[in-house]
Length: 588
Image (cartoon, rainbow, N blue to C red; front, side):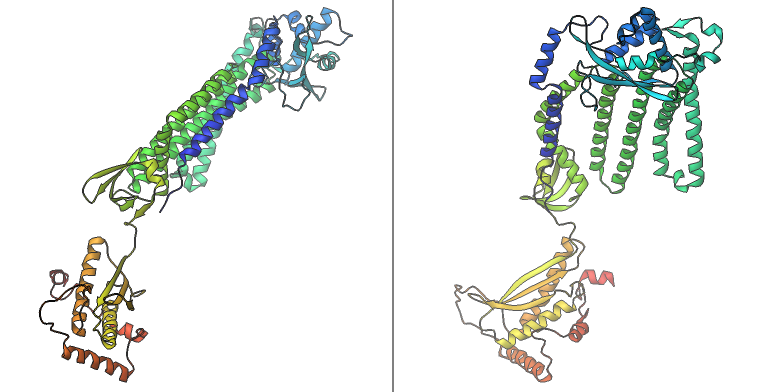
């Protein structure tokens, strides 16, 4: 058989495309140059309002410092609002609205580019960063790009948003303030009452406890109601999912309760990085545990099949998957806490290209190993032919495969070349082919050939190790110095040595038939005989002729083929091993 063409080339091309596309996405030549030129021209804003994320960060920090005058500089007010007192009052109303079940997107979701998000379906100068609820209606909170005093672009809360907020007034205090003792309201930590910090920490522990309780109850009910949940592999899957589900559910419970308790938006925004990090960690733990579970199950199956080389491949793939999980996890967590990973991704893309080019042969051989394990065209101990090399498979490694040849030498073939070459495996054949051509002298008469055809077929049909279909012997033609009979049959044998034994027995029996026919095997025409030729036996020739005449009279001549009744009558008439052999005596 021939395996799939080298897959390593496809993998290298994919790596190149992914790496190249990553770099191209991050660093298109003209766009990068334009952005760098723009950065050189546009000075930094002291308040960090050049990007949507900078505006939100500055606004939150100003409120945390209870500096409403500064916070007002992040809002664009409509013309009717001019006094500083009005502006600060709108800032306080906006903060209260955010506190009372409002929300702001996590920092890592908000764009950190001067142009903002261009693929969010909004106008190029608009960014949606959250929403608030007031009087039963939801008000979307937008940032809009304006020009500062020097004519450079900055992002501010849009005038439409500010106008909508200015018409609202909130008299009710937040629910969390109503249940917090007064002593815990006096002290502010980061612009948030100390009581809210304590409640937030307690709430995190409580959320995990509730999540643990819910998951434990679900697992208990599963094991009670579903028998498969108590045994592998379902039990292993449940164990794998248990911790990640608890963490993810705890995050969801914490976010939901904190919003319903109306915790300060400042506190919730600071905790958003933690909750997102825990959520990402839950997904990473799930992937890590799944790789362990799948790896364990696969290794057990490989060992049961007697395939130790497959275990090595599985371990390698498992480690590679874990490295990828850690790498992508670090990138995701850094992005969640607001660290720009663009440069790191670009470096990884360039490194991926260098690695793919430098490790081309290694990848080729590794993918070849995976192909050999997956397709399983060979196993250790199989006798096979690979290209021009014939022998027994001694070892299938990660990089190469070793073959012990008939000359007792060892040939090592890289798995990349091995998997793409033509492999002929002799170990999987279900029967052995017996094919030969018998050459008889031209002095042989037609009746003698009929005698030979009939008696030689009897030898095949009567032998217990010969498959009836398609056992045949046919007169196939006149060669330069002989009359040719072709033998074709399949033999039942456990291995090649037994096949040789059976073939030997058949050929000896056929020699006896040839001797009985009165003819003999042909010699090459250029052979020169010295001495008197003894000629053919007249008595045996007469006996063969008489036998054929008898078949004709009785209409029993088995030519051109034996009847079904004749075959059934001959079936297993011969004894094998032949009488007198030591093997036959032992079996008796």
